[in-house]
Image (cartoon, rainbow, N blue to C red):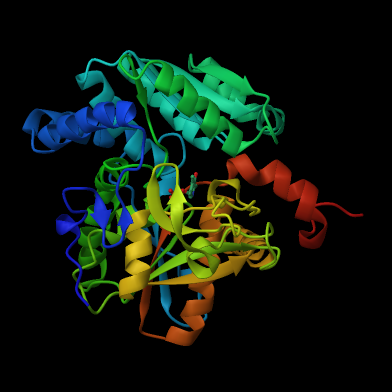
Length: 403
Ligand SMILES: *Cc1c(COP(=O)(O)O)cnc(C)c1O
């Protein structure tokens, strides 16, 4: 089946059966204003020129594509180097877009939740650049775990607001940020961190990330004379994947693969393989595949990569699963850690643990695809943030510590 990206979502924000906007009427009014503002700015040459200027001169775009020749073992693997962006991952692409939109709408403050702190840092960066205030809600447990990112946000001038409810992690932080947003949706702008949430966020964040796909399509053709045979990207909420995939959905010969975190096992609470193990449901104001209990409440999720542990997933990915345009696969913690070291030691590139899931799947796929075939991986971020954790938990198996 051919899928035309530009045609989706429909006017109500649906990608097939998924997406939409399920929020209180008072909030819907504000969200409708965001949709209207975005739709008018999307076609505004001045807005697009400003975004293009920031991508080029601030983020460092276009990010290169690197032929990872040392990975060997079958098909040729190429990496789209989003890890080389300013702040070290793809998230800056949509944070700058959302921040520009917020400023254009006359908002004073960006707010968001953050788990590991990656979205918080990217958003605090955009806020600093564009002269906006920034409040980041973060569970107290995460604040203690992610000290360097907490410091980064504070140095950048953002306010990090600790959340003490429940398990004191991401879900409670979302609830707290949401409550704060409802308190003042007029001067604040809730900048969602992936292709999730009510319409227009899945569309808007996808559009801001589509620069990755556009660049990659052109760069890959210039390098090889052809399109890649396969695309691979990790899927948490699904923004880096949606960005890369967007330029290739109409190319029927390009096989597209999303990679979900298999964690420790398929037992409840030990993975976050939403598209593989979930069922349609509603979370945070939109419909999607969801890991849920019998009551339809989101389940506990886990992955070694904290950027991937969300019980829902973008509505566009939910739709691609049903149509079959994208194949979704699972990579375990152990496989991801192994790929983390393989890429580090063979190519001199330390990937984020999230991105290591995509690399792990590409290494497997390279064997089954075989020589002469090509695989383009979205290397969504760099692994500096993960080195202490990896050394402490897995260092022994990889010769980092003796005992
Ligand atoms: C946050 C993050 C992800 C997961 O987010 P998506 O919206 O699924 O792309 C992946 N890689 C890195 C490096 C991240 O920081």
